[in-house]
Length: 537
DNA sequence: GCCGTTTTCGGCCCGACTGTTTTCAGTCG
Image (cartoon, rainbow, N blue to C red):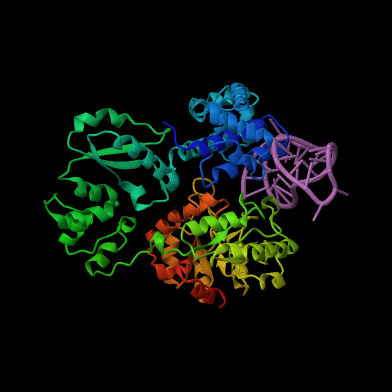
């Protein structure tokens, strides 16, 4: 079984077409058009049912509109099928190897005939890859040094992928009458940012009857199904959820009893406060639970707004009003629209003139919002010397300024640290976004003395972002805890580029919980007036 | 492939870095 609804299926086909066309050296703007359409479709808040649902969207015209219709009818697109006959799907995965792009990926296929990462890995393991004379030098080195990481990336699950797999498995199991319950356990239940498998606990009174289900496959991810009985259910839930160091400490205290009516009861029996899954890591939580002094962890419903969002003005896929409507539907009271600034040309960054134009649009839609507030913001780029790429006379007109790094990642630590400190010392900067720049399973954080940044942020009252994109989760849990010690305040933002991305806030909340944060530590749990108070320090 | 306040063609999205580079192609962000 494969994951994903029809929107994702359409989006995936368009992305594949773009990749194939790129390998073949097609017109770059045609390729970009497919990618843009794919992004727009994957970010739509509602399921596509007909061509008319997409044809009015920006960046989708007749050709892609017809293609969507074809996919809705037949499940695939003829152009996609045609390209797949020429280039096997698996060749796209070669690009997961660091430094291998579309041209080299296609070339490797043409030279070796390998049509998947696994086949290519076979050639590496047996060292036969060196026998192809056309492959040499750095390209060969990159394949040898990068392929294992690429394979690992394919197996590992980010939070979004893990939850999607869990829900798919749950659906399958729940349709069996002998299955009484299906719950998530393991690292994923604790909210770990990446996991090598999905641990699922299945409750049944008749194990034999569900044996065929144990063969369930979702893509090529590892699924670990554990079976339990009604008597052992809560004990097993507890047993399979916590980290070893957490669980073993509780077990020492617990004795022989295995029959509980809830996880809470397990902790309470021992005189401990209930420990939420996200902090069952053996980092001092048991001691605090004994004193009943665990933090009152933030929850999703505490959020009152999103302070980092994009629109069509830069590289978002929806207009401001649609983003706002999605926020209102979530029950938010406010959002900040923070499109990219001018120097970030790839993302269509806004010039000062465009920023002023954007504010006119905000004025115009104000009346349609029923008291919902859109803060005038920007995600301003931090230049290599730590200055900001937008003039201060513009910044001072804004309600909120987010600063972040998108270029020149490869600086030395000292330089990078100075760069960021200069940026957050600018009196107009409210928030530092995705403070370490990492992309999970893709890109390491840039070299930076993050402790120093956190310290300065704590002193100066600069808010640190917890970027909720499941690909970033930046800051991570460890740095959140560190920041809290320095008195830092946080903001859980989605960095949404589409309405659907607003749902990613759950991953930020989970990460904040793992960092022991309470609602008061997070500024976008505040009422609007209190938030503005914090911003205008 | 998409788009349109120079509207059915011609422009769109750019700069830094690297290496089978020496005037360019490929990759990355």
